[in-house]
Image (cartoon, rainbow over all chains, first blue to last red):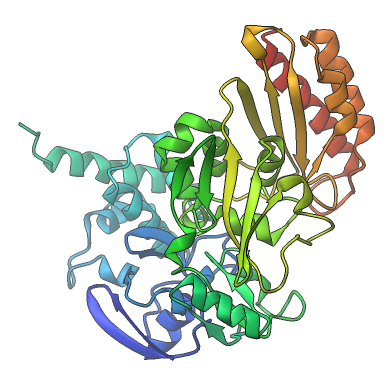
Length: 160
Length: 285
């Protein structure tokens, strides 16, 4: 079957079995290997991507359900060589170590921030509760996300 | 590589019914259970999959006469966000928030939880305690199955192969209280060790509890009610002593197993403690 959807704003068309995991379509068919496979069963969040703006595990989404949707992956965060604010904050706080969880963490955090999620620690920890990290102890990741939440709320003009 | 069985993606309910009448399909909604089950590591994958994600007839949350009706494809995220659920069935919002984390809540559906029929399905004790009805449909029409009859045996449902679960109808009763508690290894992403829902009614502000329901998951091959424990609480204004008796009755009434997530002893003990606490909180004793 042929499925059409967009990835990072670009229209794509793939001819693959409908039950192929979005994760495999991204990595194998579209060569977007930024999205990682950790557990392959929805426990670890390494393969998190945004599907129509909502964070999902790409290992649990059959591509037949992506038809007509818009997918955003970690490759869609930076503008050319310029890192996004969130990527820069992970660097600045030490929120990235071995890197396997980082793409998923970034996407879960991006979903939280884009939805106007608050910058408090409790709410950030809930937003990334579906993403496992075995290096950082999470604290520096939470710091990075809180930093961006502050930056973005400071740069949003006050409503009149 | 995971198995990739053939899939049909009907765009309307009649089309889905036609496919189901002709062949045997395994439905997939949000995929959070099925995509794990078809890895090929957990037994035979289904021959054919029916992707029901685009069936808009199975979406939406609405009030119909004296019930809140949830489409089978309602996700946990939608349950959490719904002002109607927040107003009429806050315990359902609370339960949805304990399932997986954002990634699972954005995809997992209440209908999937019902049809997957896991003894650990977190929403299922609530459906038992709230006397929910499961509305199922096929080309020959619709029928309603009480939650108490929907899970006859381990991983079995009352669905015929050609039927789909359409929606879940939960009676809204003004004087009914409904409570939910889940015990897992951690707050997110945990399959429950024990999950409980407790319901009761207080007629005309009287202290006695009526229509008491104690329902549990992860302690038996199916989600169950605990009738002996319910009988202890029925018609009684619960005191500390009642809570003690109900808790010890529940501990002896349950017959859980040891498995990878917990032990039988722990499940019995934690169920009794959780019930004790819910009764004390509910009765203010």
